[in-house]
Image (cartoon, rainbow, N blue to C red; front, side, top):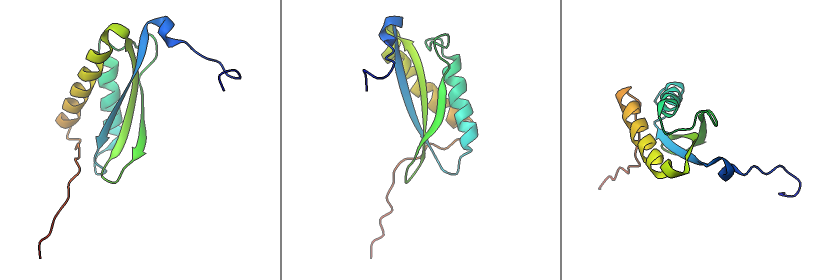
Length: 111
């Protein structure tokens, strides 16, 4: 595969890709959730928008939630910090706009 395709060495540019996965409720407005996630990523100072625009898409349909992927790039020196900041800001922004962030739960009925 490597011999027959183009290989891009992103480390040459001093950036590293961050994949942020956020799960939202099926009852939420998915398009609004994607827009909120994109806006947070686009406005984060440590995200290298000059390298590549944030990429946001529905990645998976789980049993309890819709998984949204946000892919951005950040400088090597700020990779971990940017990853944590994005998770925190996205969670806060989604909650403020009424987007439900579900959690796995089990109902147990005793007889």
